[in-house]
Image (cartoon, rainbow, N blue to C red):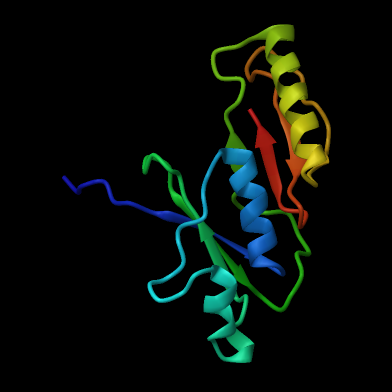
Length: 144
């Protein structure tokens, strides 16, 4: 039997640091310290060749349980629906209007950070309610 391996989730985006800092706020993640010898990430990025400056940024779960998120700059913009998206589990164990209230409250917090509300999908007897959203660069995710 194969052992469980660590993994990271990688996002293609236009502004890696901006998107990473958004997801830090969403998930309670943190930006790791800059490489040794650099006081800040800005100092590190300035040390790189111009084409590599700001080309990538990461963040991670401070407890070490959740996956690392990595954001890499790509030249093309997003043009179609994501094939993979994150479900941010804020309503786990809740049902009905109590669940919807928690989803709506988190939605309001994330809209203030730059996210976009897509709409509420109400429980249908099989799935509980969830709230699709877009991050600061238009990538789909759900509050679940």
